[in-house]
Length: 262
Image (cartoon, rainbow, N blue to C red):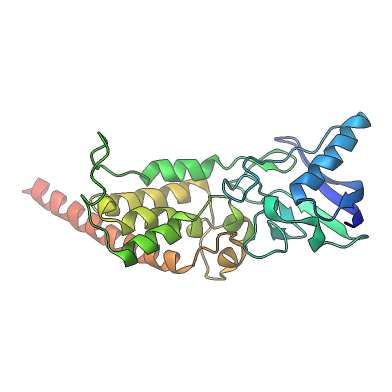
């Protein structure tokens, strides 16, 4: 085991106030520690000195929940590809390194405190369209609705999204298209989700726009930063589904106006 001496530049901010970087020394950090364990060590030392610890979000610490959202040296979740912050280990750094630690930056992700941001916008997008109207009584037979392997595999690929927000933080426009396309694509791919497909697609995209996320301009930084490697092909599918749903909605509206005019 090696011990690392690091210089941290950590973003400190209270909600609704301006923020700043604070220089914090992180000495004798075990190289086998995870990044969040390093933050725990730093906070214990700050508390021992009577100083305020750094607020950061976390839960499972197993790369499942998506809570550990930090931008490390300008990269969401840090330098290791397909890795969440909680799974990043200090052996990826060298003694003497300076590490810049910031929250995910986006207008739709307001800072609550320090490295913690409010990602409630993601919840509202899912609530706008993340539903199916299948019967919710007792558990149905496993083979009641047959799903082909290709469809099931595609839905599982989309379902891998943990909603961390790295795609938004990596995008120069703070676009949420990768997240929205994965969540919509998961349900839209399955037979259970077909009855609401058009309504769901329109609702989720419009809620995304309402939340203030930017537009996608196909730079694919989202895919590069995603810890679960969600493919941008889901964005292509969402664009296609949205175009079809919008045309159908317009056609229905024209019919209703024509019938009303009669």
